[in-house]
Length: 443
Image 1 (spheres, rainbow, N blue to C red):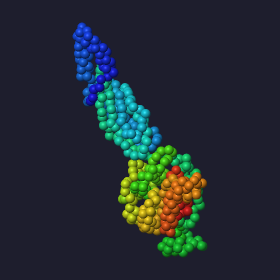
Image 2: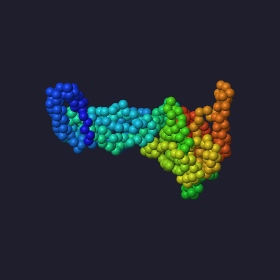
Image 3: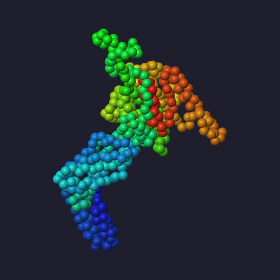
């Protein structure tokens, strides 16, 4: 506990300064000055001794985890039990990390009647995705005569988890967030007979021999045919590259953020769309090693697990190991699935390594590779050229665009589709790809 002189004590001492100044030329004021200072010191000492002790301060508690969305208002709920001893009025301040903003600085705690604890709601806004430690808490109480302000610092075991803001994508994907089943999403006619067994029925003219269930035919003594249904539940995995190139900056709504931030936001939107469609969805995060692998499932709890796995993910400083990644995916994924890769293959060596190892999974799974288009990476004459200097500036972007197109051409014979997407429409383009695959029954 730290005692701090209050404004009242400072004003009293300040009033004695002119008397002390006059005691020099006028010695008659010397006894008055000495008695005044001694009296004030004695009263201040008595007030300090009669004030609350450290044990009298309440122990402030908060939920161990506070969940918030980036740039959206959140509230930290603090519980302050009644103080003991001389603590009748209390002021509270909460230290927050620099990336969590709050307009509130200090709050006066008022305890309700009946000895119940006080509930303090501390509003805040998370400015960046991640996991941030809260605290400490500073408590301040007045001494009985108001000469001192007694302060105590208290650690608090709580953290605030700031999740990606998916509300910024709602204008492009409003229909997906309306809880109306399939309404708002373009329907596609399902073709083919499907591969999921549904039931048995009597043989009808025109049924193929491969549709006959021979065991049931022998048992019943008459031809029986198998009926299949189109697969409604499919598996989709989003594979996020969190290696060194994911730290490249992009600008969204005037704010600078990393490519990984856009990948995570778009991945969560895509998983939410898969959940609305009734499919099973999983998540993979890698750099030089496999950092996260969540097997495909469905439901709100599984989506929450995916969100928890990536909300504090930061770019690594190493290079991705695609050989190990594809070998792991081939070993763990037994059922055919849609694999949506969010990566950066602008490095020719990485693109060559990806093309060489993707063969391990391309024959079994449907692979889509998506990269964020860096501003200026486009054909040189997409827009009118302003001059000679502008032409040379655009040549670099043209060569990068050409390399990306060559990489896509090398992947196409393997059945892998590679695209460059604008980061502003990354989430909506991923959902469109997914719905097109589902509509064509490509899985």
